[in-house]
Image (tube, rainbow, N blue to C red):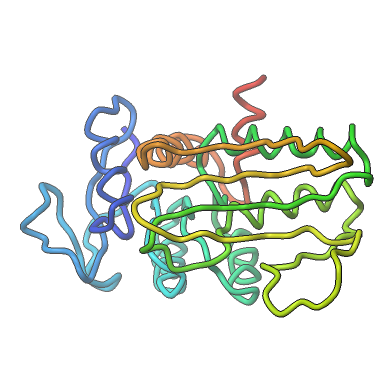
Length: 255
């Protein structure tokens, strides 16, 4: 059995991962880390700080916050654990640090663990290849009113994938408040909506003359991300070091 430690076990996603692991025949949760959680509410040991952890997992699944990165990585390196980073909102410096840590341990990092979202991203790439530069591209993402980072990491990942097909010649424009000029051809617009209990919806609009092509994905439950996280844990446990993402995992599924 693959031994999993859930970092951020007290959050909604942490609890979903825990529930997912209860019904898994290949992986098991041996504990969690969350300074805000009540340990008595869980049937596995829960630690407030990294220094308190007295179990050694094979893989850490992280659904916490960016400020937990450093203690998480130090623990992982010290104990030779693999890591699945499902947290978004990292700074540029933190992303650089993640790359450096991946030289010592295997890290799986992705903006979105849903297979559907990653299929959407692939379709957006195909759309650019087919349509070329004659269509304007706008991305709209919607999430619940408790989400902290904006725009979402998934929206940014989709935008970056599209821009790669344009040889990175486009620039990102976040909303259009205060603008006093018309839309420029080199823009990719990115817009965020926050409200209620929306799990997550992403739309990529390819807007041309007299027609709009929309590629979209909507998550109806957070469990799809938990399932993806567990799948990622099973993938990354077989690697010794390096930075991996959802495209690597999907490649093994296709093969």
